[in-house]
Length: 161
Image (cartoon, rainbow, N blue to C red; front, side):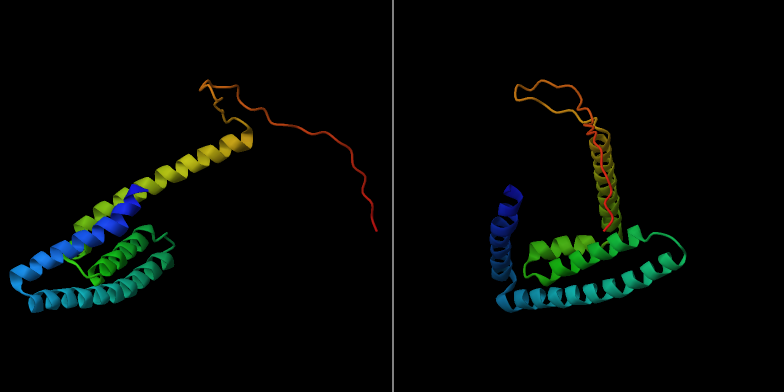
């Protein structure tokens, strides 16, 4: 919850503070020109990212491979472009960092690792639920016995209309 507070309240205030300080240092017209130039660069980045990502994804899929890296790369380029479109120098700096291939490759590795770990945990949880092996904690914090699968026996008779 704190991250949303920082993202939506503190970050814009920090951007405004930096924008005012830069405007006081280099002048209002130069600051406005820099903000507009970064916005144009962001739009250009998003357009190029969409085109190149679609092209690379098509090539990988034609080769019979899964385009995971290309999709994440394109996603990060679109994020970089969006950050450049936002007015402010902090978001521009983050956007420019994301435009660098080395930064994107580091981010892609971290995202892929996180996604792999999340998928493994989800598979483990689902298999435990399916086979009735999950353990529950009582309110005292003690472990209880593994749940046994509940078997319901019964008889049925088919009635055809």
